[in-house]
Image (cartoon, rainbow, N blue to C red):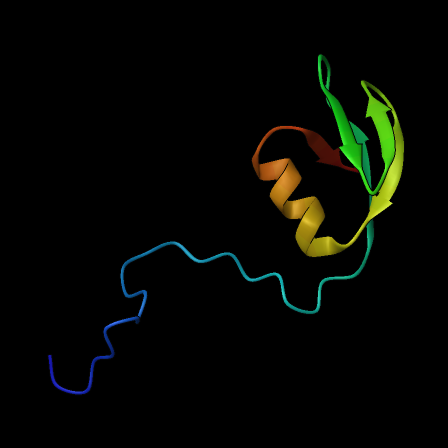
Length: 65
């Protein structure tokens, strides 16, 4: 294909997270996690940067509230 870059993600799913504000998340049932030296367990709520919250939510560790 003329003009196509090798690293072009054509046809691949892309999540856009740039510029997302900080959000509050809740740790999902059965999950214990550490973030920046603090341990969080099921039901704990705390603030994360938008992109990081999206990543943790995608992995099933937290829900964005």
